[in-house]
Length: 335
Image (cartoon, rainbow, N blue to C red):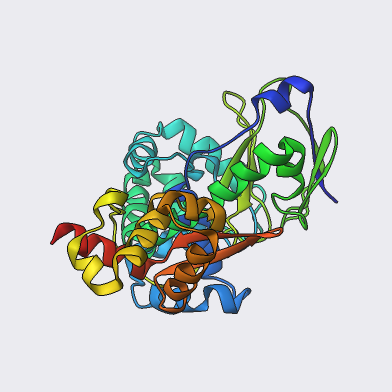
């Protein structure tokens, strides 16, 4: 069974990619991942580190966010800003909390204690917001720099895909196993096996990138907003922590400390990769003003040294900075 999303020409014209990863959507998916053991190679290192930060304050979230299935509507937070999402949750009217909770409970086999308490006292939603904030700080925020770096590289690849081949190719390769594009319908397989039809009616579709949602897509079609579907960022998630800042500096002025460590040309190549994540070898050569052969050689040395990463796109390879490379650039530019 699949969810069938029907496009018109106007919908295709209005379909776009979200500009960034959604922090609390990542948290929701992360809470689900902590309750299962799928995808061990990709997520177990993160699970182990997250387990070290488990706290009773987070326990209500496991009542409302199951490993599989819907969450109450008021808890479906997927905006680009954490503070705004948390304020929205804290200010949810009591009648809306009660209505959403009642609708959600009607589909549950058992009533969690936390849900019963919230149903009796809707104003406790403020405490639930505190739990969301704490969980985000402990198990998502430390990885956010790495998540945004992965997104930058993936976005560069997707934009190139769309520029070279159009939105048809973009939709075909978003998530080929679970999102199958058969114009004018996008067939979506969900974890819950949801079956139905969604007509966009000229609203278009927002494509939301996610690191933790590596397989099954998530979706929503709010009555007062644009429908959205998630798609996985390529290369998945690695547990390495990374610094917050991404500062490469001007290419012509690679920091002296960096030039001394790597040599002038290699320092410039690393700066070029950081300023143009997802660039091809030819593009890297142009940015660094060296030959493609030299760019390939220096990029290989940087990659082998853990300072950059490589993603394959058809016949091309795309270069992006690694967290270690970013940290080196940050320390060099701040020195």
